[in-house]
Image 1 (cartoon, rainbow, N blue to C red):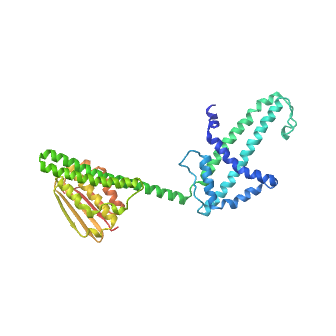
Image 2 (tube, one colour):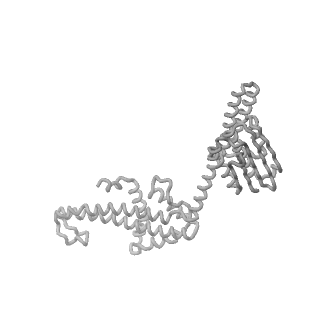
Image 3 (cartoon, rainbow, N blue to C red):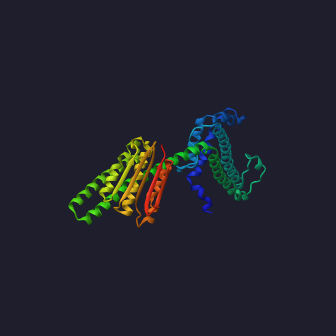
Length: 384
């Protein structure tokens, strides 16, 4: 029983009631002018609903009064963009007026019926109600008083639920609006994924170099080697801080232009960082790097960075071959190193997945895994 009465303490029950009462203010004003033509307000709603901005107003009211406190609402607040949206708005206005009239009638006549039943139970006649005008007063009418109260309660709750369902169906986003929202959501997810890859590649590379250099310096027990290792750690850390600041700038919506991101023209510092870490890098570049389209060059840099990071992380300071070939704006990048003992875990890492995702976004191909006793990363990116 208590659960049945819960809607009585819900604020949404009364905000929905207010939402249904609002159109009745106009009807009441018109009734003072001519109470014989109450169809006129309903007819006026047809041209009103065709106004694009009316859909925005109805959507805002529905969000505030039908589902208060819910930010992720199913109601559109955009103006009508198509004739279908305008017709849906007209249907909603007519439905809202119909439900509002039903709610008003329930809220007026059911309380009056309660008063009449109470008067009959107290020995007074009910001359104001034609149906009960001939009813003889009797105390038993007091037993019927809860019925109209329950009917009023049910009407208010049910009509509020019907109004909410109708608004969701008629004021909900159109197909074009849903497509636009889906595209925006997709763009947000892609941006978040790109930022995650940027942080993984940049910070992961810096930490890997720092760990390898620190371990090598401790094992070498050489002041000169320690000095070089500290210098490499400092330079790599400084680069990582610059990348971190740039990514944080994106998160703060004060992003630098995309052109500020490193490209393959800056690949020398990656190769030098790996060399200082002890890896023997055999690098060969053929073709003009400066002719590469911006997106291809930037993603190629990150792919090379992640490939060298994986070499240092899983294979250590081992001989590594790097081949970069540019031809007519297309890029072919290959990194080979001795097959590490931990190649199975390396194959499951998120770095290789990021390499494949970067290549796929540019319409390219990425091959990673064992090949002829070596670990190979080969990426082919078409012209942007």
